[in-house]
Length: 73
Image (tube, rainbow, N blue to C red):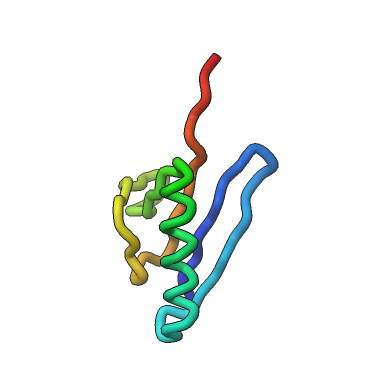
């Protein structure tokens, strides 16, 4: 099972999907496109405390983290 973790000011929401289920993968890809289109940054974990920003959907990533755009003031 792969997981998409969406971070926001209230905490996080986790969405899991089976990489072998085409319908679930398509739903996860739509979520990826919607979130990155709304300004979220997507990253995959590469090790303990390490991550790498990604610009396209990777259905094989075990965990994809989505961070909201930073707003300064």
